[in-house]
Length: 309
Image (cartoon, rainbow, N blue to C red; front, side):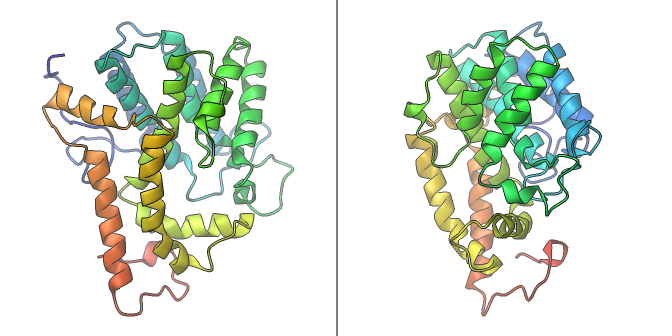
């Protein structure tokens, strides 16, 4: 594929070192939608975005507390920004797969994008749920996301065939899920599930605010009773090992589809590097420098006041 000449940035919308040259932001949701459309249209000409646009708008309402029957998102790690991260990486991986001759039906591309939008809806509380925050559903959030999706697809008269496909996609985001045990309808569906599982991990860990948001992740784990972390500092110390585990999962369970990000960059921008992997490595290096400092501690300081080297 020839390199596009009417675009100004090699990756997407972010205010970090990956995408610093693009005049857009994950906080501007119109920018996010526009970028997703641009990415998909480079492979799928005349793509119909009507269903995607409908779900996109409703997910914004849901996270912002304007969707009937649900409270505003009150988890600060698994928030709307993370959903936008995941969506953008999903779109790029779908594009990169296309560059490698892996072509999905327009319907399945739509379902992949919709699944990215819905993958963390299980953190949102119902209006009558006034105890704690959505973080208490950390362990069960995937199944709760599937339940929300089931109700949403039914209430909005989407085809019944969508649910089993999207359900399998969402299950690929579980860290302990064996992909081979999921009964996909096709090899293309398996790849899309692997793409979503990959985008969920890479999207959060490559974010320039990943380290600053980790205390919020600890808060979510603590409320949910997730074992293995004594305090925030303990979670930080274990994060490099988590990244090593993620790297193995990306290859062994998620089919190494993360390589399509590099193909996307090389084909469109002539950049033969995996800038997302580099961003994650930089985050881990920053974290290790912090941990190597004499007596690193937080003393109860919250995210806004944490200073990283």
